[in-house]
Image (tube, rainbow, N blue to C red; front, top):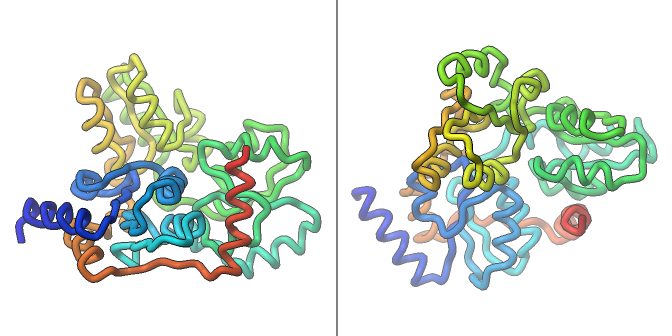
Length: 301
């Protein structure tokens, strides 16, 4: 079946079944093109809870679909590729977190949303890359346990007066963006501004002009006066940025910075998900309730 035919079939099925399609900023362009909403992980999960539709096709990775299920337990959340996971989320388990907390009694745990539902359930509050500093500053405690991203933890530590005790996790993609990548791109594009995701290494953050989450990159790209921007993040976001801002030039700090898990979803899998109603992601009620508390404490901030 041709890609155009697949896309048309997806749109027909979506209408017939009363479904909506959510796609992360890092998804392939063809998947973004059939999506009703594109955004970051938490924003999409919140959208899943807000919309009237009861059937959600979530084009992202597993922990994102879990979060959508936690926030919208009455809805059917489909992940088109069940093997689309997140290596960083897999770097800590609920059991490991429970054992780690025993070493630091009384410390609050801040969990990045890039974690499993079980880890969120063991945490006090969640955070995103855009609100991590605000979440940590909202806690009265001088010392905070932060899971699982040590790079985001380092960024939060430098932006707050807190002592951050970080789990030794990281995003494989962002961690591979090095200072030499930034310096080389700056030589090629001397007028460009550098935007870095807070999951990047501290030394890369030091070279950046701005530090933004993916959601913030999207909104800032619309209003910035800069005509050239170098992006230290997963390269998939450039598709959306170029589409929405054709008058500006966006360059990836590292063209090979592509998340293989994000790219496991394609148009045929989206179509199969709608046709066969696969693969449903649902979180057990006892886990969901506790994890939801950590998420809701963040949202209230």
